[in-house]
Length: 223
Image 1 (cartoon, rainbow, N blue to C red):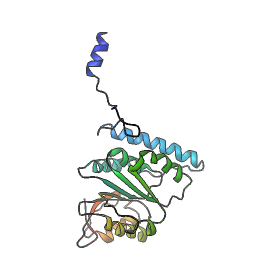
Image 2 (cartoon, rainbow, N blue to C red):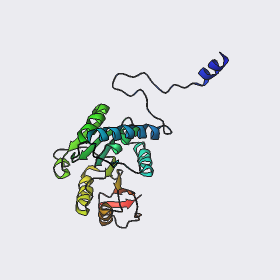
Image 3 (cartoon, rainbow, N blue to C red):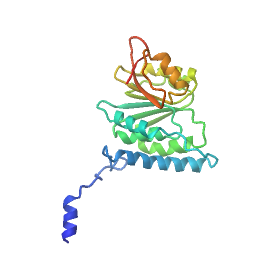
Image 4 (cartoon, rainbow, N blue to C red):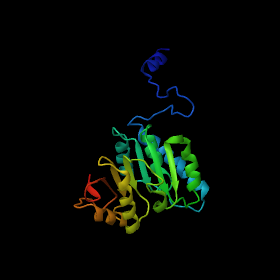
């Protein structure tokens, strides 16, 4: 009994009473990566079930990058996350877990066999997640989308022209405080960032974090 009493005296419950559909468990900063990576395991399983021919675990952000983005999503004032390039839904799930108040908008061609099963799973987050299927030249315009994006991920079209077009188009939905993450900067998206970012101090690896300058050049700086 003494051991039980001692255990109960130090026990701090992590589940809260909540209405159906609301999260009972909200991860702390220390718990957050484990929660995110559990979602990633589940998404991998959905992808494998939907397309048995898929041999490569796609759709990942590098761990260093996702940890940086988790910290960005938890900054004060973060209300809306916008990403181009959902793929396997890993970045979407990470941002939904990072901040229980964050509203997510995700644009993707939805061309893979696993695209619909992945979105079906993530719609369990309810109104907090919004998927926009199709080419961003049609789906990301002021006439169909009227939201300010506080945190942005550009990880869609990996051609120079496509990435440049997406970065320019997203400027209309940003503020000077919006944070922009560009993935795969060792590939053509990095060249597109260089075109917009003058001067740039982007390293030739991984990803870059930047902000829009709404009065002059499209990208003001790399952070």
